[in-house]
Every structure is written in structure tokens, then in C-alpha cells.
Amino acid sequence: MSVIKVLEGSEAVALAVKASRPQVISAYPISPQTHIVESLAKMAADGDLDAQYVRVESEFSAASVISGASAAGSRSYTASSSQGLLLMTEIIYASVGMRLPFVITGVNRQISAPISIQVDHQDTISLRDSGIMQFYVENIQEAYDTHIAAFKIAEEANILLPVMVCMDGWILTHSYEQVSLLEQEAVDGFLPPFQPADFLTTDDPKTWGSYAEENMLMEFKYSVQQAMEYGKGRIKEIFSELSAITGRDHGGLIEAYRTEGADFVLVAMGSVAGTVKEAVDRLREAGKKVGLVRIRCYRPFPHEDIWEAVKGAKVVGVMDANFSFGSEGAVSMDLKAKLCGKPGAPVVLDFITGLGGREVNMDGVADLVETMEKASNEGNPVMEPQWIGLDPTILPRGSQS
Amino acid sequence: MELTIGAVVRGGTSLGYKTGSWRDERPVLDMEKCKVCGQCESVCPDSAVHVVEEAYVIDYDYCKGCGLCAYECPADAITMIKEEK
Figure 1 (spheres, rainbow over the protein chains, first blue to last red):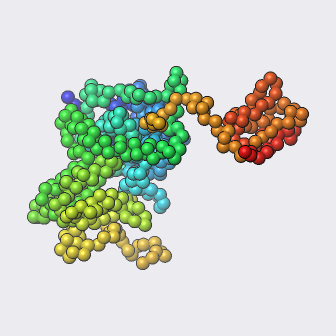
Figure 2 (figure 1 turned 60 degrees about the horizontal axis):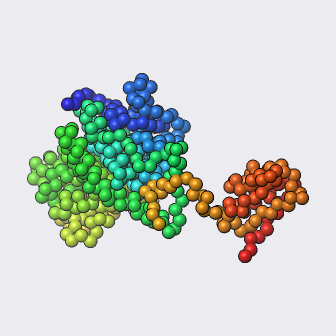
Figure 3 (figure 1 turned 120 degrees about the horizontal axis):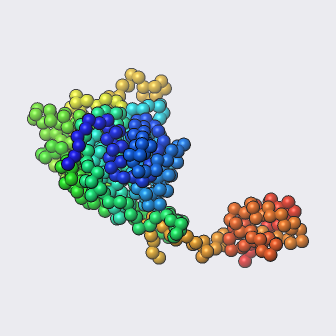
């Protein structure tokens, strides 16, 4: 049994978090994440949510509170965006090392400067090396479902890592969709209470993340990588378990959309995938062999599943909504590294798209596919990242031409 | 050596881990000059100065030799001397 409601994305996420029975929530407001924690704060204040809601003076403190609460054995949650996530960075790295399985919603927003509140993935991508697991969702229903799965994945005894559910700011947090909500009983059946083997208590004092010298530091770091690799299989199982309850299947680590027999495969994350799917359908109707790989789980990076979906393709075009200055887009880098040396691997083009909320529409996607076709036909593809929709006439004065 | 996930360890490990071995200068207290004011105890970042029978005693198992006590002592009763073997 489930209830269907028309909900704002933030409200749907708040309800998913509520249904997951967090014991401690701490947050500091920043757009476009604010509605989520505002909603949870109201639930806690009204007595609808049996959780401690801790108000703090910064995101550094919010992350610190949930880190400590998690060490004390509480299921903990926060949400943030943009520079708020950057301010949490130090605590996220430490929490990974201390293996504290809290959940963060990373509501995607561009990072200052220039200041912008619009969406791209620069903020959450900046945390890719921290060891936090990252999921990217396409729509509000998937955001709801993924949050419930996130707690279970994080708390899995052989994983024990913080998990971030990344969702596009405004596009997903402030729009309304029909959302199917689970009964509390169903969520409780899926997600048992958090009962870690070790937790902070004055009865048996312990230290988390204690000093490690050069003879053991590498082993601790390697154990995080082991948890990531183990997670790949377990995440798919947990998604399947949830699908069995919800009747909804958003995919596994990736969603391969019409990739069968595709010569040209786009790779994207987040809400833009909706536009790309529509464009793929139209291009398929026009006889073009085009598909999409939507990465749902970015860390751990599901290169095995991506390879299965793209190994027959001629060209893969990665739509990176982020950029590593001095190099290229992060997703493209990941994919190129994993495809390098594989026999018959497709050419990978890096398209920098949608930074700071720049629109990506269906005509734009068709243009990307045309670029991929050209790269295939002319046999001399542009290997440098291509900034899509850049207007060279308005580059800041003094820019190098 | 068995490592624990999250580097979680029971408290009290410093009982077996004597950080005094890091020291390259040793504070030596001249009891003749000492006025028993307690400044050294209050500034010591390692809590390595203790009161024993109404006198101040430096715990060389944990004193790292930072010299704060010698710097702060109003009676100039503490001298830092090189640790030599």
C-alpha cells in the first residue's frame, strides 16, 4: 500500500528522511537545500518526528554534529549545497575514515565566484575523492526512494560509509511531481534500526579515528576502497530489495536507456537525463542509433556496468556538469581512465554542459550527437573538453583568446 | 597487529604510549627557587606537571619539552637543558 501525493521535491525528501526514522538532524540553511531541512525542523517541532534537531552556526558544525551523533550510534542526517558542502568537506573526509554512516542530501548548486545559485554538479563532484558514496537522481520519486535506500546502504556492516544523495537544485527541489509514498510499516520492514557494533558511551569509552602511523595508514585507506568495491554489489541488491516493495525500478548503479545496438551513447547524471531520454527517443525515431547511460551511483564508480552498456558503441559523449580546471570534466576523466586499454573501446568525448544552470534542451542534445557522429566519420575527434553553448563574444575582458 | 574499522580503540592507550620520548629539551625545576605558585601546572599542554606532597613534579613520561613552564615561571625556577644520551 502506498499514498500518492503531489509534492515539492524538498518535501518528498523530507518525508523520505522522516520515514527513515533519523535520531539526529543538524543543518544550516543554504539555497536550494533550505526547504528540506525547514520541513524536517517543522516536523520535529510539531512532534511528528522523534528526532533531535540541532540548530548550528555553520555547515562545519552541522557535519560535526551528525558525525558525533553517528559515532554515538544514532541514525543522522543533514543536507547542504554549494559552499555549504565545501565547508563540510573536512568533516566528511574524517567521517569516512571513522566509518560513520550518516546520510547527506547534496542539493546541487554552482560554487562561488561569481556567486550563483543555479544548478551544476561542481559542489558534490568536489567531494568525489573523500570516500563518501554518491548517488545522483533524475526525478523526485527517485530522490524519495534513494534516500530510504541510502540509510540502508550506509549502515551495511561491510560498508559503513557516509552516503550522499545528490539532486539538482531548483529543478528537483522546488518543482512538484506526483510522488508515491511508502507506508511507515513498509519502510520499517526494509530499514531496521541502526545498531553499530561500536558506539560512543561513557560506560566503555573509545576513540574514533585514533592515531595511525606510517606502518598502518595505507591499510586504513585501502579498507575504505574495499568497502567501496564491496558496495557495488550490495547497492544493487539493496535497490532490488526496495524495488520489490515499491514496484519501481530506477536502475542499478547505472540506468542504460536504449543502449542496445547504439553507436552513440551519451553519459549523464541527474535531472538532465529526462531531457536526454526524450531526445534519444526522437533521434531513434529518426533512425539514429543513440542511447543514454545515466550514472546513478557515481562513487563507487560503476565502470564495469558502463562498459557493458557502451562496449559496442563507436563514440561515447559525456555530459559533465562540472569541470576540473586545468584538466577536464570529472566523469569523463573517470570513464576514460577505465576504458583506456580495453580492446575496441569507444572514443570518449567530453562535453561541458549546464554549468551554473545553463539550459540543456533537446536540440542541444541532438547537436551533441551530431558532434559524436562527425567524430566517428572524420576519424580525428576533438579529445579536449568542449564547452557547449559557450559565447566567446562575452568572455570577460582580458581573457586569453 | 590487528586494526579496527574506523580506527576505533578503547580509551587509555596513552598509559602505554609514553610521549616523553619525543622531548629534546628537559625542564628541570629548582626547588630552592620554586614559590609553589602553580603556573607551570596550569600552562602545561600535556598535564605533565603534578602536585606531589605539596611540591610540583614534572612527569617525564609525558613531558614533550615544549618549555612553556620555563617561559611562564615567575620565579625563573625552571631551566631547559638539552636531552643527551
